[in-house]
Image 1 (cartoon, helix red, strand yellow):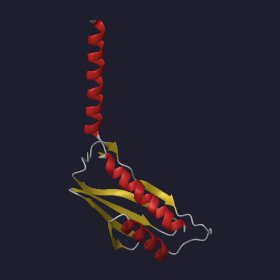
Image 2 (cartoon, helix red, strand yellow):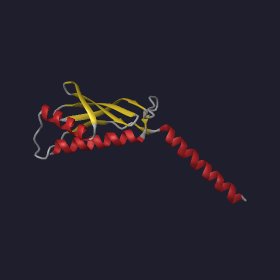
Image 3 (cartoon, helix red, strand yellow):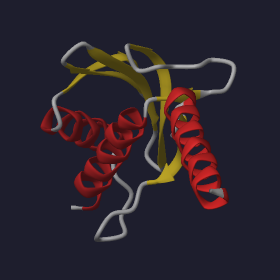
Image 4 (tube, helix red, strand yellow):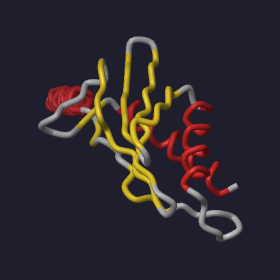
Length: 134
């Protein structure tokens, strides 16, 4: 009898943990001052960096708009979900930071969001790094 009660307690506790984890979301993933590394070791021009970022985003279906020199606003739409980030860059580094979202369980107080958002940002970061290093 005690084993059944203990098993039910553990099962209930696990359900509570999973439910809480799903509700709270994941910490927002930002890329901060990622160094621009090239295969030949030469510094890229600002135009080359801009082109690599835009091409990387478009490859992953991000809408890329240069909003001012050194800043690209990128928007990802997947079904009813939308993520908007700012990509600030120069010839030495770039950053990808959260700007806005819809239907991604964003929590401003806890700075959390649906885990899929973080995957999108990591994929975008990897694509940018790949383009810049080639």
